[in-house]
Amino acid sequence: MNENEVLDFLDFPGADRLIAAGEVAPPDAAAVDAALEAVRSARAEDERDDTGHGRDTVPPATPGPSPGLDPTPRRRGRRVLLSLVLAAVVAGAVAVPTIPFGGAPPAAGADAATFLREVAGTAADARTTDAPYWKVRRTMTGAGGTTTTGTVWVGRSGIVSRASNGKYTLFPPGGEADEQMVWPVAGLEVDWDELRELPTEPRALKAFLHSGTPDAPEQEAVFNGIVTLLSAPVSPELRAALYDVLAGLPYLRLVGPVHDRAGRAGVAIEYDGEDVRSRVVIDPESALPLEESNTTLGGPEEGDLVSSVTYLSLRAVRNAPEAVPVEPLPRAEAERLRTVPFREN
Image 1 (spheres, rainbow, N blue to C red):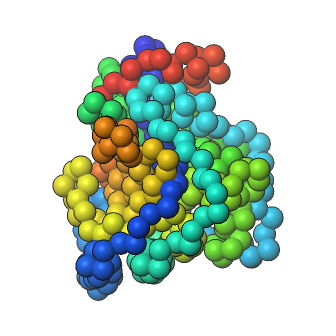
Image 2 (image 1 turned 180 degrees about the vertical axis):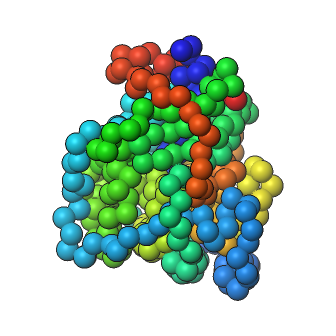
């Protein structure tokens, strides 16, 4: 297998997380009104057809744990850890800065919180399915405008992606009952089954997201985890809880209606850090993220793009292409791939 084939099947959701901070000005009143109207209109519309952000895009939900659930994920046999391949993909494609939260955080903007709680209501109303795959098509854009677009099908035991020879590969090989995909979430390893067992009570969920990095500022760990999970195959109840927790985080402001790099309408929220502004564009109709981006803040290069991930499709599907299993990458190989350019497929 050549390097390009390796990078093709390493393109999976969760490879990019926004981390930002800063004190910001209140949003324009017109932007707030327009954003809230977008949410209300979206919730009143009928369910859309197969567009990638319809109401039937969320995997099946299972009863959530009680608020007192121990937030530490259980360990189940073999677990397919994505952390190493995550680093290999991101390092070769887009460098996402990490900016610590500092000082006493201001309260979240009331208007941003109102908007996010409206979106939480939309998320809670979404329909569930029993589809076994989570299909992700996304475009990654780096500084200088270099872009990479790819599609993957994430299942309980592996990721299906197209290799450079046109064939589909499954990474890692499935077939073992105790082998699962794992999402790196705020210092924790959360597998496919555990995604459906995470707390859905906001306070318990916030405690869980901070438990993986207890020495880090709470808002930093929680924000990291939320951004990762928003693009993951979580239940409507959990997605709603994520937005409820996000609504209570500091440093957050509402930008209002915007268009992402694919030209789709959404509503943006932002964090300002020391020298980077991080933005998440949300589709108020589906409560799914459309785009995550970082731009420089301050100095002569203010506004220059640092990184962007545009989610062209996030949806549950019943089938994935027939694929040939490949062996997982050894640690040394994953580290070596940090310097390999990320190729567009």
